[in-house]
Length: 89
Image (cartoon, rainbow, N blue to C red; front, side, top):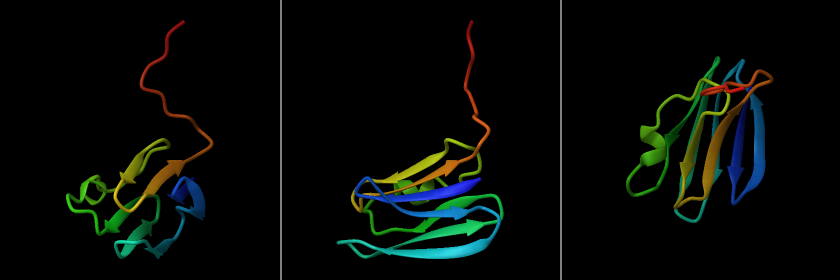
């Protein structure tokens, strides 16, 4: 499992979730902080006015995503196993 961190649609970092780490990402509005903590990741702080991506909280499952539109930063969890909402045949 990995935390994928994008800015302006480009992949900046791909980090394993099997660690404890903070990543500081500068943007035009200030510095955003992504926190990885053994199996989960979150946007710890951001300079967006409404803080939607911070309020998203911890991301744990493959496909979980937090998008910070004003700073153009996004955090996504990726894993080998796919998680589906539903299946149909």
